[in-house]
Length: 73
Ligand SMILES: [Zn+2]
Image (tube, rainbow, N blue to C red; front, side):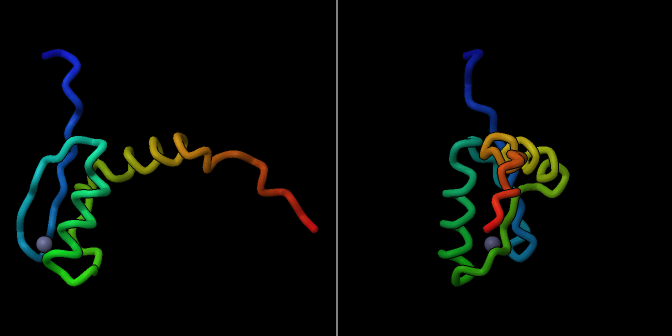
């Protein structure tokens, strides 16, 4: 299949595990792991090497770079 969803590596330094999950499942997988294994602490995270790239992609996607933050009262 050519249009398979890209996967993202999630690493947990505490469990010493690395898991690949579909991009759209990342947030879900992280919160499930952290809630299930670490009482809600955010220990598992996206592979730091990818995180920066991903963060900018997601930030762009969410429009965080909009310059509408100049609204003053
Ligand atoms: Zn863990």
